[in-house]
Image (cartoon, rainbow, N blue to C red; front, side):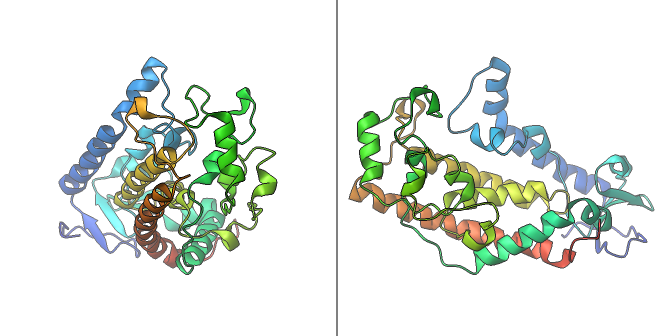
Length: 303
């Protein structure tokens, strides 16, 4: 980073110290961007309204806008005048400079670091698969009763029979446990894979939309060692992926401004796969950057 000062610290892992006016400006700009991106979500919550597309990143992942707005510089960057961060999780203040305390972080989150490192490495080393066509959302409503449909307030674009027919005329090949676990009872046996949490590292592949969205999850779960600029980039990518996810889903969301992507047609399949490939490439780049953060942290501590 270009804006550094002559402030020194006894912390041996701190290679850069940002002057107070510099890092506070960065933190403010980050918070402003998050406020811009999440304003609709905050307004809906105040009015008790829901959104089938945009709420996912908050409700499913459980990371609130206020948490996303909290800025972290990441490992190796000290914050001059950051005394208030002495009370923040995994921070300490040394000679008036706030730094991420890696040892303390690993005591609490070392096992998570080990898992994410293994998952990122495995996913980066694999080719993507681009033949699923978003059928995981269809499998979640296959032969479902009314109370089993997740977004029951929105009509199925092809109706119940048409939706079931699409599932029955395609091969389900979902590799992601956190998608497949929501399949209906009748849909599960139709999947050529049986993903579990235990084999996630063995099955994760970079073509998967949910795996792409999960890059955001791994970023915020490893805060504050992950710099917030990376987390925010992953969040913005996840927003775009979620839109494709639901445009290709069986629901008709045209009232919300989402053009349906008819994956049951050759043209729809081609558009889906092309967009999926683009997202996969962007997610792989973010995975690489995240791996550069977690790789040097070492194995988990005994605690």
